[in-house]
Image (cartoon, rainbow, N blue to C red; front, side, top):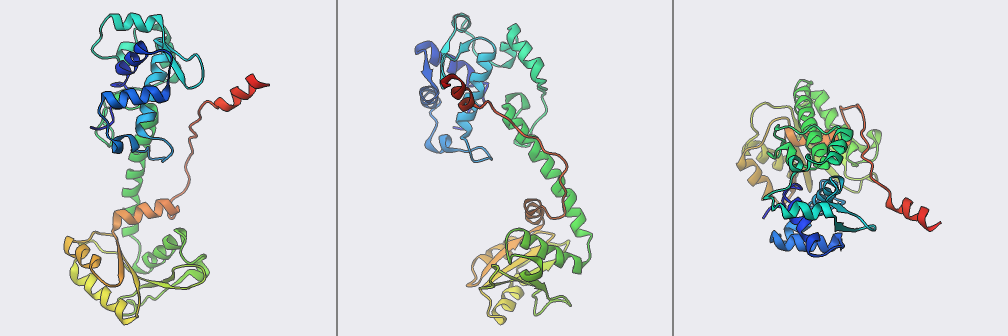
Length: 307
C-alpha cells in the first residue's frame, strides 16, 4: 500500500509508545511498517532529494507534531516516550489524531501560530490535500508547481525564436549538460537546412573521442516516424553511432518505437523534456530567490554536552 500521510501515522505512532516507552525511531518505524503492511518498495521510496525515505520523513513529522502537543517527549536523541497527556488522549479512544485534534492543546496552537502554517483544502500537483502533507512536502509541491509553470513559459518562448537561434540554444543546453566542455570547442551548428538532416554536431566529451549528431526542429506539429527514418538515414550516411532529435513539439508512438529499434542510438527529446533540461542546465532562466531549509544540528548540541 502507499506510504500513509504523516497525520494518518499519528495515532498508530502514539499507540506504539503506549506499548513500549521509550522506543527508538527505528523500533517505531518497524512497528508501523508492520501495522500498515508496507512492502520493501514502499519503505525504499525516497524523497525527491534522495537523502531520506518518504516513510522515515513522515514518521519524523508525526512525532514532531505529537511532541509539540505534549503527547510524547524525547528523553534522549533518537528515542521517544509517551507522556501522561498522551495516555489520557488514548484513554479517550479517538479514531484519528490529526492537526485538528491536536489544536485543542494550547502548546500546539502556539507552535502553529509561530510557524505560520497555512493549511488549506487546495489540492497539490499530486492530488493530495495540502493539510495531509508534511511541511517538507508542501515546499516540494509548491516548488514543483512553480517549475511546471516556468516550463510552460519557457516552451512558449523557445517556440518563438528563429530556427537558427533554436539550433544555437540546443548547443548551449548540451554544453550546459556537460557535453564538449566549452561553447568554443563543444560543437558546431551546421545550419543552412542541415547536412542531410543534421543541424548540429557536438563532441560527446571535451577530447572529442566521439561525436553526437543532432537534428533540432522548432515544430508545432507532432514528429512522426518518417522524420525519424530520415534522421536515422542521415546518421548512417555520416557513419554516426549516436544521434539526438530535438523538437519543440512531441513525438508519435510510431516515432518513439522506430527510434528504439535502430542499431544506432537515437535519443528523442520533446518540448517538455527540452525545457526541463534547460532548467537543469540553467539555460534561458535566471536565479530569482533561494530558500534554505534548516534543521536542528544534533551533533552540535551533543558536542556542547560533551565539552
